[in-house]
Length: 199
Ligand SMILES: C[S@@+](CC[C@H](N)C(=O)[O-])C[C@H]1O[C@@H](n2cnc3c(N)ncnc32)[C@H](O)[C@@H]1O
Image 1 (cartoon, protein in one colour):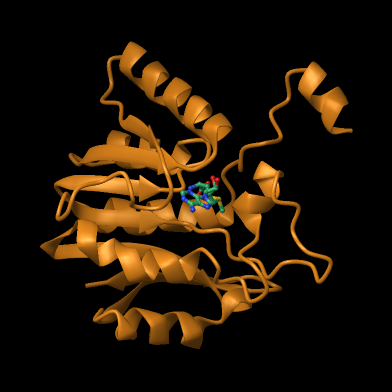
Image 2 (cartoon, rainbow, N blue to C red):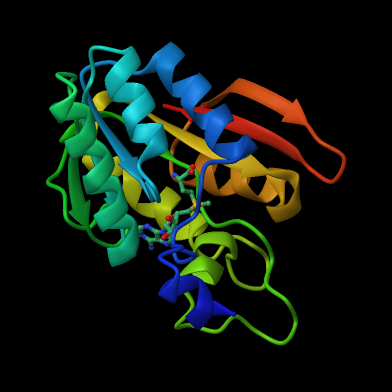
């Protein structure tokens, strides 16, 4: 199935924008300022929305090289159309960036609890969707590290699903010294999605 899709030029290694992407973009467009990092940019759609609809200076990053390629193509297309683009960096969470570099860091993380049989580690789409046994395998290290790259008055925008434990995510954020506000929230048949604004 995958070989056939790839031979036909379909890219199934990169998460494509969905409801969660739209919700993060909505919160970001309302709140961002200055210099913005979108972690886990996937196709680059959220980063492009921020670049197109705000004055922010946008950097997008992802651990997946296929995502970085697709996001770069999107940024180049924006620039070719005479619009402001964004820069793309490959890396793990906020590791590539210097201390206090950003006013806002936005992240729509992999958050689904993995299937009991385990996640195949070489599958980029699985890594885009699933966050270990409890869904928080990527969220927790993000919360532990994002404060370093935020300016003193900066804000993190984190999309949280009820499927990965809202209270547990909040507790981890508080343990890292963040106060929170709900930026946007939507309920769907199987989950509630919230964008937390963390300061
Ligand atoms: C749910 S997708 C979101 C994609 C895009 N931001 C959107 O909203 O449409 C999660 C993204 O996070 C990336 N990701 C997963 N683990 C990461 C890590 N440790 N560091 C950076 N990016 C990561 C995945 O490759 C994937 O592109």
